[in-house]
Length: 431
Figure 1 (cartoon, rainbow, N blue to C red):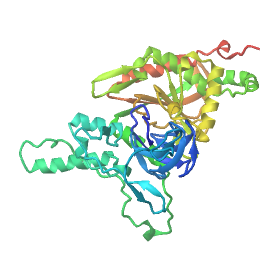
Figure 2: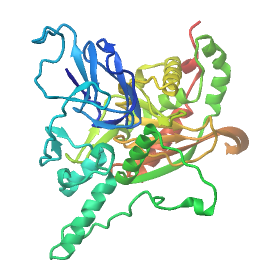
Figure 3: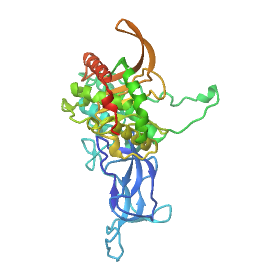
Figure 4: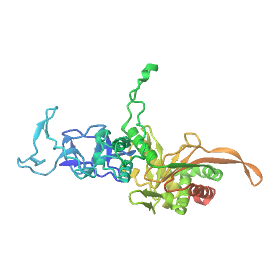
């Protein structure tokens, strides 16, 4: 049986092999993890669809694989062959691999057809690349991919547009003549830095590369604007000091983030465009009736964004427990692919590390993200008096194609009101 990479969900069509858990000759059972895949910041195990013996592994660590691509060949249990043995009954030619074992001859390559498809499977390219190509009327089948596994990256599309521009400029009525190609990325390529002193090199992890691709795609395809402000969290800090000991008895830690999540839900209900996605191809806004909040987690491997689902239905205690569990599993790389998908809005909280204002990058296909810095005590004029208050710096980045500055200002003002409205009854636990 040929095991193919299953659909990854939410527009993802490829990923990098981060680890392989099996070897030729191993017996596997249904749903047993056979490899680990990194895709768009998600790290997940790919399970075996059936039980059997591993006959051949078609991928290696670091390979870029796409949905539908063969990753493993299994000899299934309880399937007799003509020789009386269990296994594959196909008459596909066999050859001797360098290891000395018999393997199937690879199938002949399939020609690329129009519409950027290979045997019905989309060419490996990021959603932002596909979207831009669709908007410009470019057939991706004509674009040569320079990424691993032939993946088409934004630079490939820019170079193709540049070649069209150069060709058209020699004629009349040049299409794409209005497009100015962006400079190639990777400016460090070809520079011998050792001319000026000692250097060392470290290979980028596949997760770090995935994060880099995701950030570049988001930054280059979404017009970002960031709104800065400070929230007064004095009352929240009071509640945290009072009730945290009771939360610890429940195995939780009462942090600021659950309060921000609860406040956000109310504001997102009032301004639903911030809880939406933009479908460029259909010229439609997808307004979401669910509130699944992504939480950026700092790990040794890089930034990961697990999602807490249906936060509007959860108490502060339940959110504390979910946050702790997701953060721990993210750092241990035990998150499933599904736990990294389906978010409608994201929070990036750097307060525990330090620093104040920063410019968070939108987690596409979402349209906004809230950055949270480190709170500090400051002297504030309130009702003709100077008081010591705890102020929290926040930064709201939003997609300017869909959201205007006035909308962002109203959003922040509503967030002010929600943050200032927490009471003991919102946090108190039943004894």
